[in-house]
Amino acid sequence: MKLAITYENGQIFGHFGHTKAFKVYEIEDGVIVSSRIMPTLGQGHGALAGFLAGIGADALICGGIGGGAQEALAQAGIQLYGGVTGDADAAAKAFVDGTLAYDPDVRCNHHGEGHGDGHNCGGHGEHDGHGHSCGGACKH
Image (tube, rainbow, N blue to C red; front, side):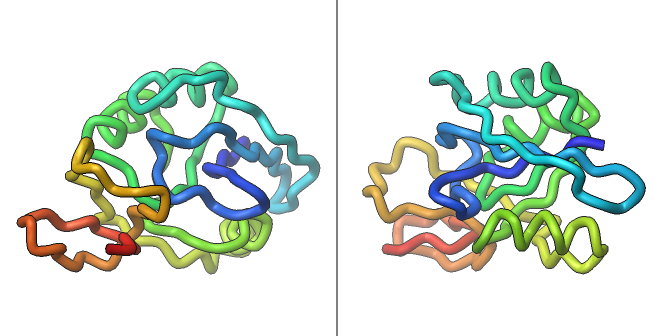
């Protein structure tokens, strides 16, 4: 099985559609046997689901993710584990161990609202006063 994680500097990148790389783990018999970092080559949002399908990913761990990307992943048969933050390798190990904490209802609904570099959609559900919910760890 192949597990992909949105990736930046050892951490789970906070927004699926803007990730510049995935760390892809090969898992056999409940053990991680290898991993590699794969750049997305500028692809974004919906195209990333096709990218993951093309490399044979079975599951994805990410922070925030929009509804369209969730649909594209579902159509590609890729299982989603969203709303996850922290160290990518630790998340992969927790996935293999069956202890990964994730948010099955994660949703990022505010594309184009001008969040700065600190934007991180994950799973907190707080509203920012503009009527949107990050579904995650947005830093307003």
